[in-house]
Structure formats: C-alpha cells, structure tokens
Image 1 (cartoon, helix red, strand yellow):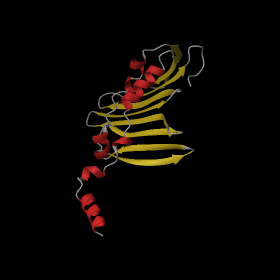
Image 2 (cartoon, helix red, strand yellow):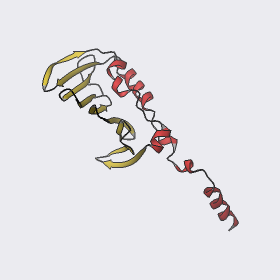
Image 3 (cartoon, one colour):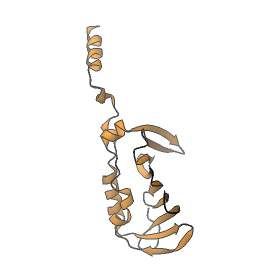
Image 4 (cartoon, rainbow, N blue to C red):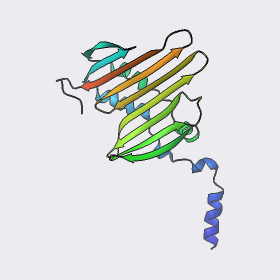
Amino acid sequence: MHSVLMVLFLVACRPVGDYASNDADYVDLNAWFDEQIKALDQSDLKKSSTWNGVVAPDSIYHPVWSTELEPFLGIPLNPASWRSDYHVDDQLQDGKQSHTYSANSSTNRLRRLTLVYQEGELSEVRLHYATSNLLKNANKSLIFRKGKGYEVMGRQKTRFFPEEKYEIRGTFVAPHGETVR
C-alpha cells in the first residue's frame, strides 16, 4: 500500500510539462527534407504552373533542389511549439496513419501540418499557411509526396490589388525519364 501511495505522490509531483507528448513523437522536418534533397540529387523535375488562370508550358530540368524545395524548409514547428501552440489529431485511413497538427491560435502562420505515414515511414507532408490582416489575406497549401513530387497552391488578396491565384506542380523524374521511387 505504501508503494502505491509513493508512486501516486511522485506522479502528482511531476511538473506539468512532463505530461506533454513525448519528444520521441517529434519529427525534425528540416532534417527529413535535407534527406529528401540528397535523395533527389540525380533526379530531374517536370514542373507545371498556373498563375491567375494562365497555364505555363511544362518544363523538365535539373533544379538546385535546396532552392526548389525552399518553401518546405524552415517549418516553424519544434517540440516546444507543437506541445503548446498546436493540438494533434491522429487518424488511420486506407492503411495510412496521419498526424495533423492544428494551430490553437489564428496568429500562427502555420495553421495546419499533416504528416502521413505509410508502413511506418513518413511519406507525405502537407502544410497550410494563412495570413490575415488589414492589408492582406493569403492562404498557401503545400504538399510533398516522398519520391513522387510536390504541389504548391495559393491565393493572395491585398487591399489595393486584385486577387492572385497560383498553382505549381512538380513531378520528380529519374535521369532516364522514369518517375522517382
């Protein structure tokens, strides 16, 4: 009986922060994207884009991957922020596990981050950014599919200019024209 009370006492005396999610659940996305950049080193990119309804011709080229994937780098999510600034929803659908981090406040530019796992491996990252103030309303969604490609979609309306909409799609292509695996 005394040992049970001692355990309860020790648990009750732990700082509140110790009850937060384990840091082992945290994914260092910047390191993960660095790995993706290295894996894509020999790959080409087939890129298509649309700006305000005008479709640009597709192009295939060999990009500087760190520049090409820059919108995915520097994601402002670290263990301290995901514990305090976001709540997490877990879902299992079609054999894929996903963790969605949703901002607790509209002041966070990163409103939603979804990590999709297939067979225990991170396979897709989805980001949604939003900004709203007196001068500008903007939304941007980014999707990165490991070994397949990426999408960037957005719209922006500034106070003195018409709304702009854009969409960029990139497909990773192996040097011999095959899709990257």
